[in-house]
Length: 363
Image (tube, rainbow, N blue to C red):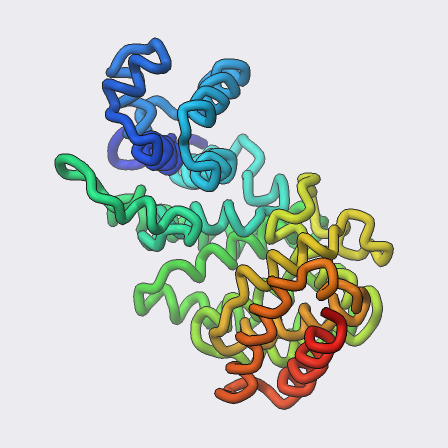
């Protein structure tokens, strides 16, 4: 069955906004970009408004345009967001059009932080950190500050997402992935009724947090704990760290997941089974330390997960501070302040002390 939202959907809203950010980073006008790309002004306007989705372009033409933008001086950080922006556009369009005959994109592949940030940008208005400063730059004429879906579309999106989370068959890897990613994205809806529904749905699945070490529901437990921490309840994250990291498979899953989530491991994954690779073959420890340090989140629950992950990574590779001396010095200073301020669990305090020691002794 096919249903459509209340008006024509701008299926390229997020990627169009990213293109606009790339254009303004050059900087040039829409007319200037049209001339530089040898296309009509109406085409550039259609791309940026989302009426002409970039994902509908032929692959060769899209690749050529991206290379041309790079040559013209567009921000590399912004251009790197085009792929996750198109991913997010596809997810939103699939949910809003509710095509029951098509495979749901939330069950097709494991998403990364960049895709999640693109979705959050459209659903909450919160920009990804990497382009926030560019978006704050002055512009001529009226312009939105985010590719924000209008209230009706957001309501439809979250209603259908909750239905998907409730109905997803959790009998195979694809169904488990669909369920956990739909439930995680549902936590972006901060309306009072939605927060209550999400909290109830997450707490109903807390049994996944009771398992020790790796299980097929390891990633579900992680997503559940992370979503509850975002809602202000860090205790499930403390439980997750205590139990789910209780064996080598669980520790490997944590580092593998971080590498994938943060974009350090670039091979797309169709389900969560890659996390169990104890050899860590897809993990660059230098790149992962840099990514963990750059993205460290100091909210309750999250800071404990970052702390444990830094501890596990440095325990496995104590030579890392020698490879990144400047980053290690900066990180050590931040951890010093965190130790002084407190507000972390006793386990995290112990692990933070160990991380602090390795950073100071091996740089």
